[in-house]
Length: 312
Image 1: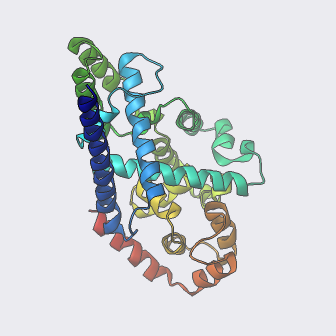
Image 2: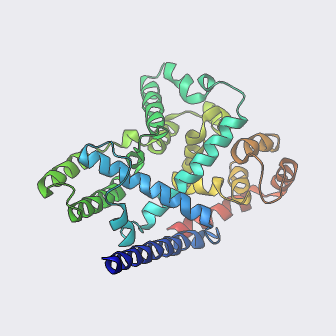
Image 3: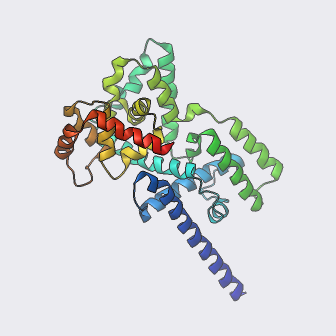
C-alpha cells in the first residue's frame, strides 16, 4: 500500500511539473513574437490563476454549483488542453487589465459618476444611452468576484473550453453525459456578447461623435475600456492585444500609440501617470514627455502598422 501511494505521489508530481513547463513554453510562444521576453514565475502563476478561474466558472455553470475547487482542472492542465494561444492571450490581457484598472483608480481624482460612460446614460440619443447602460452592466459583471470570467470569452474559445471541461468532467464521472451535454448546449446558446465589456466599449465608441474625442483620449475621464476601444478604432489591433501592450513592462508601445493619435504633449504626463503609475524602464514622467516630443507621428503610425502585420 505504501509503495502504491508513493508511486501515485511521484506520478502526480511529475504531471504537475510537466504542466508547469508546458504552460511556460506556451507563454513563451505567445510572448516571443511580440518581443515581450521570457515569462517570469510570477506571470506564469497569474496566468494559471486566470485559467483556473475560467475553468471553474464554466464548471460551476455546467453543474449548477457554487464549488470553490475545480473537478476538471488537473485533467485539463496535465493533458495540455488549456494551452490554446487564444486562452493564454485572454489570460494575459486580463492580467494587464487588472493592473491598468488599479492604476487608473489610484490616479483619478474625479468621481466615477463624472466619467464618460455614466454621463452618457442621460444622452438624448436613445441608442447611445442604451449602449452605455449595457456597457456599464457588462463592466460590473466583469469586475465581480464570482468566477464569471468566462463570460468575456468570444464564442469560439468559449465553445472549445466548454466541451473540454465537459470531457474532463465525464472522465471524473462528475455527472451523466446527457446532463452535461444539455448544460453545455444551454451555456453556449445563452452566451451574450453584451456581457463582454470590451465588445460593448467598441460598439459605444463606434457611435460616439467627434465631440467626445478629447475625453476618449483621457483614461481617467473615459475609463479603461473606452480608452482602449478608441485606440482599437484607430489601429485595429484588437482590444486584448492593446491592453497587453499598454500594461506591459515597456513604455515605448504606449508612447507610439499616443503619438500616432497626435495626443498633445502636455497631456502625456497625465495619461502616462494614469495608466502606468510609477513609470517603468527607469523613465519618469518628464523623461516620457521628452521622448514623446521627439517622436514623429508618421513614423509612430508606421511602427504600429508593423504590429498589425505581425498579428495577421
